[in-house]
Length: 78
Image (cartoon, rainbow, N blue to C red):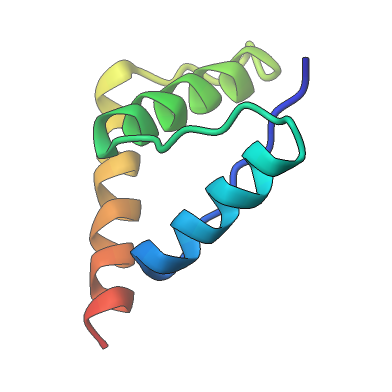
């Protein structure tokens, strides 16, 4: 099974995409902020495994996730 993540700007867009997905027979659900953070951490750990000579700690991953969240917050507030 493959998945796709689509980020929308507002709740109405999300509802429309959920409607379309269900109409087409796809499973659709909304990810919480906690889910998104967990996926980001997992992806960073996955990438780190491709580069075994680079030692990335969980703390460094957490810092990167927080930096991305802060940047996204700034972008949304403008």
